[in-house]
Length: 251
Image 1 (cartoon, rainbow, N blue to C red):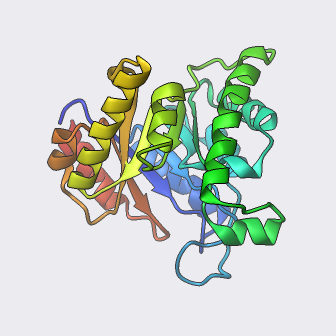
Image 2 (cartoon, rainbow, N blue to C red):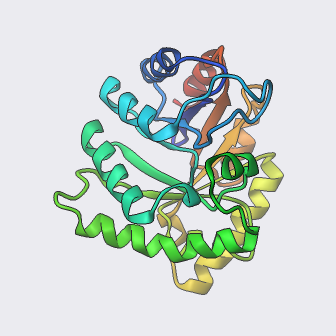
């Protein structure tokens, strides 16, 4: 597994800003390749009214605190920000980090966020259509900004929809994220390869990432199924022991 990259997603719920930033620094110190937060406004599990913090301001702070790791949201909800603004925010964090930002993005799904913050929830199909509309806008704005990003600023799309989402990955993305178990990932990975063939995309241009639980140590199975990058998801208290074991195994 020497070519496997390792990341950690620190859940910004039921915790503090300092613990989230200290967690990013600690993860970098144990050798991870990437640190992520999620892009929601309320907890996704446990106490629904626990403390919670916004992703992009956290990412800007983490960019200033860290030195080496790639940073991003796993994943940004496309509905929450104008696509031109999102591109500008991403470019700015890329500069703060010295070129280490990844724009992870998806169509959105957590209805409470929409209801409480006044966004139109609509339908899953409509949110996917919005994502398809906005991805070229984001790319165009990234190309028009002065100054532009100083790093590669890859775009990663999260999701598992076989008919639309994986087509959008093949057409627009530098990376893709989904979930396990390994056999589920392997099936979707094959579907993505098929979409790449249909749209004339070299499948090796797309990094394949999988978000896993700290207790899921089927690392070799994911690697054998085509994963390039495993991202361990953890809430506070952040379980970096599992991440460290994966870092050691991937070396």
